[in-house]
Amino acid sequence: MYQQERIYQILQLLKEKQTLTNQEIMNEFHISRDSARRDILKIVNEGKAERTHGGITLCTIHDQVGAYNVRKEQNVLAKKAIAKQAIQYLTVHKICFFDVSTTVYEICALVDKNIEAYTHSLSNIDVLAKHCDTYMVGGKYNQKNRFMYGSQVLNVLDDIYFDFAYIGAAAIKEDGIYVEDFEDAAIKKKLAKRCACLCVVADQSKYLKTSKYRALQWKEINMLCIDAFPPENILKEIRNAGCCLDVIKK
Image (tube, rainbow, N blue to C red; front, side):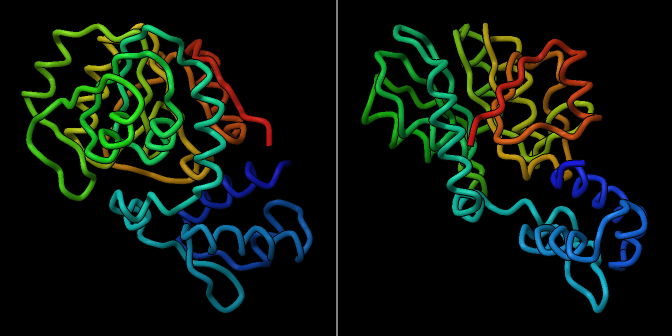
C-alpha cells in the first residue's frame, strides 16, 4: 500500500476514533514503528492532526481550510507543477473561465495564448490582464476568499458558453468535489452547465480534507489534474463517472 493511500485510511480511522496511538496504527496497517512514525509526521506537518504522547489526535477539520492568502502560501511547488501541466490544455482563440483557486492562480500566471479570459477572482484578474483580453465578472465581494458572487455573477454566466474552465476544490471525496462557501458551489454548478470542458485542478492534500458544500459530482467534471493518484475508493468513482484523470509526473 502506498503511503498516500495509507494516510487517507489513517485519517478515516482517526475521524471515527478521534485519537490513535502509534501501536494502533502499526497493528491496523501491519507496518513497522518507523513507517508509523513517518506517516504520523506527514499527517502532523500537513496540519491534519496534532501530535500527542504516543500517537495523534484529530484537529478541527474546518480549521484546515484557511483564507485565500493563507492557502496561497501552502504546497506552492505542487501547485506550480500542476499549473505547468494544466496550461497545456489551453489552445488559442478560446473563451476560458478561471475560477477562484490558489492553484488556478498559478495557471493564470502561465497564460500566454490569444484567449478571451473571464474570472470572478480579484487575484486572477491582475495576472490575466497582463497576458490576454480579460473580463471581470462582478457581484458581491467575499473578502476572505477574494471572489465575487451572487445573482449578478450567475446571470453573466448564463449569457456565455465557455470552451474551457479551470476550477479548484477545497476537498475531493468519493461523491465529488467540495468547497467552503455555498456561493462558490453555486458558481461551479453553473459553470458545469455553461462549459464544453471543465477541468478541476488540485493538489493531493485535498484527498485528506473535508469541506462543507458539494459543488460538483464526478459525472459533471470532464477532467481532474492532480499530483498523485486518488485513494482506491475515490479512483473507482472517478472512473465510473467517465472523468479523465491526469496525474502529473514528478
